[in-house]
Image 1 (cartoon, helix red, strand yellow):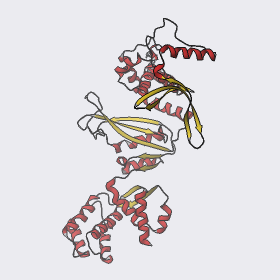
Image 2 (image 1 turned 90 degrees about the vertical axis):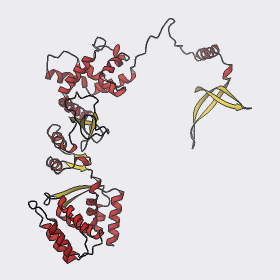
Image 3 (image 1 turned 180 degrees about the vertical axis):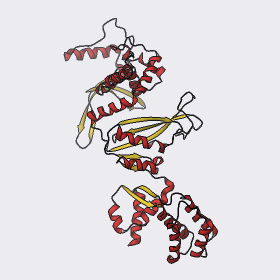
Image 4 (image 1 turned 90 degrees about the horizontal axis):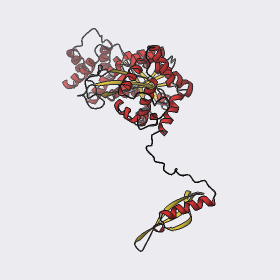
Length: 433
């Protein structure tokens, strides 16, 4: 039961009444509120009436009345609930013990209680993220001010900065120990690991690793750093990296994958990254470590997906229709043969299979050591079809020249069979039928 105010209108006037209500559940309708008693128009009640009503109820039900002792003055109220909550998690992970031990291993002469400063800054990031200078003022408004073992702790900003220096020195060791602790407490799933990169820019030029680079904040005029994070399937962070501001995404993958096995002893995982991380070297390294991978494909590579699905048979469709991910390997020479054929068809050129075989043989003989000549291909194309125009010849040659130096390579693609791709597959199937 609980008191509440209800409103009603009569003759254009609005009236408010004090009522006692309760929540009831009606079968088939859910919860609703039921009025038990109406105590009258709220305008008739004065402060002493309310106090008298409360005192009467306390007396009837023989309850103990709580109130502040006379003369008591509230000076301040310190924030404590959220801090106690996050401290429980901090202690569950044994973070203070880890930090204290690792700092001592680095330098036994350090007497500053680094773990306490790190705890205050970490909990502040969870509750009300502030700068290091602002944290010193925030601490004064919290229960840290009166908490045992924190009351005599110096709270000058220099101590917070020095603690961050010590934290940087033990970063790699702390991340590894914390990961092992997470494995014990939560049985984290590393069968799938996610890696992503972002950037953060500066308004000053004092950071030794800041540089101008690809800005995800649309601020190419500002120097930045690049930050990479590896997480588990559930989202628990495993490790983070800080790179120079001009670092390219794809150059970071090799070392990240290597450390997952060498330092974290992860024997089996599927590495998930975005389209900016696809290079032959990266995929080779992932496979070398024995990991699987899922990578995005750039939109401009859509023609590869078109080729992948162009040769689907009804049997292929039945085999792959329920898959979400499909890996396909394509030789570059095979792709060039297919791509040139598509260009010629779209240009309205009528192809004769016997003559086109001559062109296919020319493509299969491509060598990375020999620079290709436009005149050679123009003559071959004109032999295939007399009506071919110079623009189409140039378009074909540009495609062939684009892959110069990679003619012996393979293209490896992970194709996501989303709704659009499945529609393409269905269309191909209908063509066969």
